[in-house]
Length: 330
Image 1 (cartoon, helix red, strand yellow):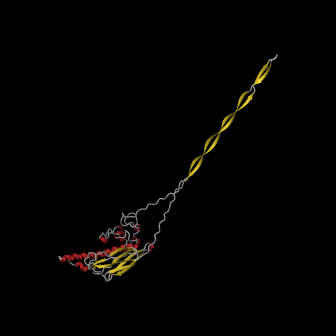
Image 2 (cartoon, helix red, strand yellow):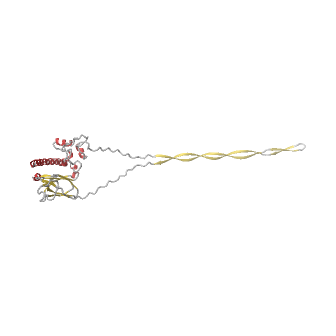
Image 3 (cartoon, helix red, strand yellow):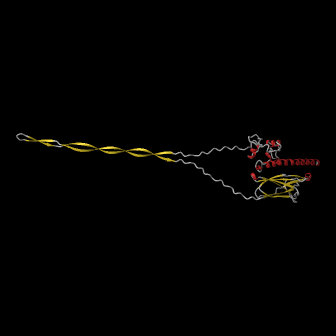
């Protein structure tokens, strides 16, 4: 019974040791991608599923997707496969990387931005309004004026003598004469008056965009310990001490645009297993532990840390179990 248990534990040890180089290889490819495309560091595509169907670091599938297959068949060179469309979604690999979409996933691709339509400028059209102006027209009205002209009438009076003599008597006869009098009549004729009504012009008001005030830069630090995980539970328990004199490597990508640069540092753990990298600007950092002979990892051998401005990131511990403890039978 004890012999079978011992053989089983040996097989588990071999599997664990084989998995370590594979995880380190996957991590080195991701580091290569981050070095080739520094602006992609810390984005949604900065992960192992960029090239794989799952995340091997957390137990996902190690099978490559279409982009990972193209990367492997082109001598592991990301630049060579930039013009390819690995997932066949109509966008090249470099277009998808710049848009932060996965070039090995056909359902994840850049969105199409519509072309903006020009905004018309309104020019006012003047429409005249007619207001009539009254100009009087005089039409004369005739009022008659009566002028009396006297026409004498003759009356004969006879005074008898032996021979009568006739003496005429004149009696006037009035015949009226009509003289017209003109009274004017007013007739209104309308003359149009032009009144201009203005149609308003649309004026666009530009709202200024505020310019951000640059914030002062403060350096931070990254620290932790390398712990002897005697019971292999992945955390430090009482009585579990640090592992001294082991190399811890740090790779960082800091800055933006043309100011982007890569930082590389190494340090060794102290007598208590602790380590520290100080005077670090904000950026994306990767920690890599060196395995000491006689130990196997019970946690991640590579850590990714986004360090904010002036931040002190602590307790970034690497857990290693002594191989001798793997064969203990309790």
